Image (tube, rainbow over all chains, first blue to last red; front, side, top):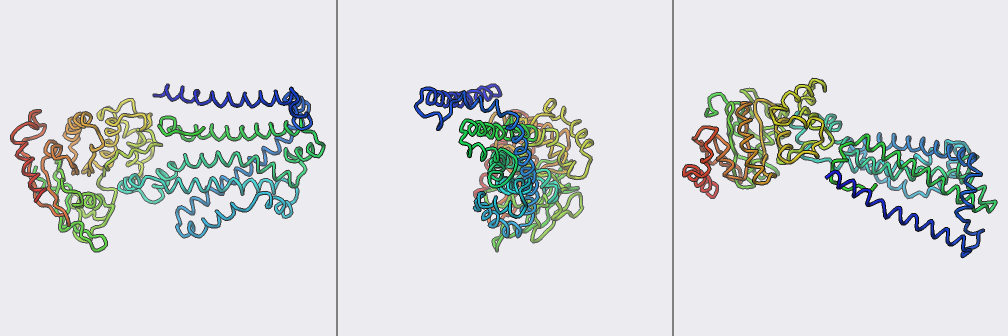
Length: 262
Length: 251
């Protein structure tokens, strides 16, 4: 059973690696064969060169962006945990706040970021706030869903053992919601980096977003591509961290037959 | 053992309605020490409602529940309840699942684990302590659930179709094992089944519940002492019991 699962997993990674390789190959062909002018599409080699040349600057800016993303994500997780748990315990709160939660999600990030800069200045605060706002929602919603999807029969069983509301939450509802929580967190982790970059883009002195604006203005497309690669790498790093955390926090998932998409 | 002299668990004149519809009417049932009593009845006879009342999950509209003579009506945590599925918590290791009722009762986690662990060999569960329920077979999960039930209350257990999800072979095996365990532990149990053969095979007494509203229509004492002869299920006596129960159910 276990070995079968493993081969399933590696098997599922092969097509992904193949398509990625094909995409890079296509890019290589298109630029090297001059199908597309090099000022529009830099060659992979040029991008690699830009990456190497600007490595110290990129690394420094990536550090800033990663810090903003991580801080914002942490704030998003914390507020989602608190609010979702409160809403779960107090039905009136749920009915009162849920619509507002949904509405806040329809406010476009690009509109919000300059406002936050206006209110909080050009420092890190508006970036962290924006990331917290965008990451909060997927986590809160998946937690609420997780709490609500607890097995009612299991709750009855615990009640028949004499468990109170708090014990049912601790031993049943919270652990049952963990899988949902991590699914939401994974989505949020990818939002976090993009959110930080957009926020920097719309007002700031440091970070990958600022670097991006600078190289765009200089029409340095090779550097533009390089910074995109760095953003992808940082996002993947954060998402990988979430997956690693999930494995630690939910060791039982490895034995369940439920398919997960990671 | 008639269950009437010094009953462990008793329901006295229990009545329950939902939205004006009577589900149970004047149901009295008793369970003696170490006794196995089986509840059979058409669906809708209120068997599960009766269990919810006996376990303290629900309060009856009338009547009361006594545990060793003490009124425990509407008070959960006194009688252990095993529901249709094993309901082992997937996120807890088998040992922690078994120890859960002790922890909920306020025992320290370490002590609860040690106490639960001491029963693992007797329940044929050794080596599964640190596994997750998903790693166990259906039969093993059932054993773990029974251990949890036993640790929940040594006095009386309510089993709601505990074996209905198992295939016929596993069921036979677990019946044998289960009867042995119940005798060893001297645990009294009241259980629901749809399987009349199972009822006759396992219990000291069979209570037939008739439906709408649920009442105890008849009680049958199954005479042969436990453990029963392997040929019992194919004996004429067994068939007589079966005929009587079937006719009571159809009445």
